[in-house]
Image (cartoon, rainbow, N blue to C red):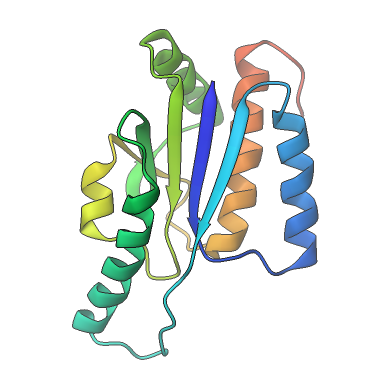
Length: 159
């Protein structure tokens, strides 16, 4: 399976870099992983709805340029479907069985994803109703992908 993660923004914190490196190493036994970072748009704190849309659209265009048309797109979206780790594992298995061996996960910036990007997604996934920093979300996503592969193969992993 080929998994691509397109993420807005660069990882700056050392602890996140270390965690990401660890899960990238662990995942190398299960899939081919590619991580693509696109630049985030600088935005002041108090934006109007119009300004928020402009920022999300600019980041969205950067994401769309990196998308491959043959991939199954999963967007991380707070309004998406909230599923268990076991159901996530089943979802990845089902995609592989249906011939979708190329999966792209998209993590938006601090304001979320543009409508154009969300429309490209075949599945919208929510990890929680809570808000997480998008840099931390990448680590959580990698851990859950790793957990999904372990579950699928019946391999032990902490619960």
